[in-house]
Image (tube, rainbow, N blue to C red):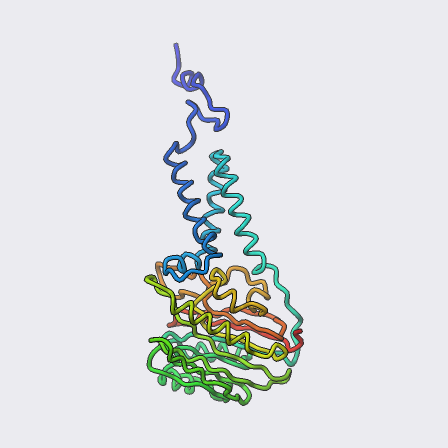
Length: 342
């Protein structure tokens, strides 16, 4: 008598998949789904080299790390289900993503010294960030220069009560009741070189330029708060990065320079990469890998992009990191810098 398992055993077997009946696991539907996933993952990676002001393109450029995760999953699934063409195609794209990630993984830091400079930047999200937590972070990290973005008069007072004035008495810049307020605080006296009051856009973000002396010498620092790109268009955002790039190029090459703040852009954006030319991103130099400073504190969307940076020239990077602060959607970023850079 013929048994049910005898029927299965006598069915033709596909030599490629090892499945009865010559069928692939998941069938044509899974094949189409996997190829569609590869197309979706390819978009952010390919757009990385397109200097666009189209809103959706700018958003996709920020998702290269997420695309890399999707590609890795595609490689695994296509290999397990023996879809070899898809495995090869997704493997090539994964290799591209891996190559792009190399500079952020293999750092180049120097040993700490007694005359190092510690810089921190914090976007307070309309002044709402918890003042006490920020002051604790400043104290624990022994911050020398602090860039405060979206700082309101009320936030200035809360920080004073929390003890910031005794830690960083030097001050330059101005607060505002909207997102445009920017203040730089310092352990030593600050010299305001340029208030950089941005009146070229509806946002009017302030980006003061200061100089300060510390045990290792003198450094020029610009507080950065670039315009955010919009889904309907990013022309103003791109123009703001171009102005920042042009300003950076006018600065003397033999003087230490720091750009710290919320750039509203990442290494996936060509405009940011042009700003960062001939400079070191402190987190990359420290080998921090996939840094995610935004958006913080949201249930449905996890942090996936680094909008906040510390860029340096003429200084070596000792270490860098980020700190989660309550009541703001940005993580604070900090960098410890050595004055012995080239």
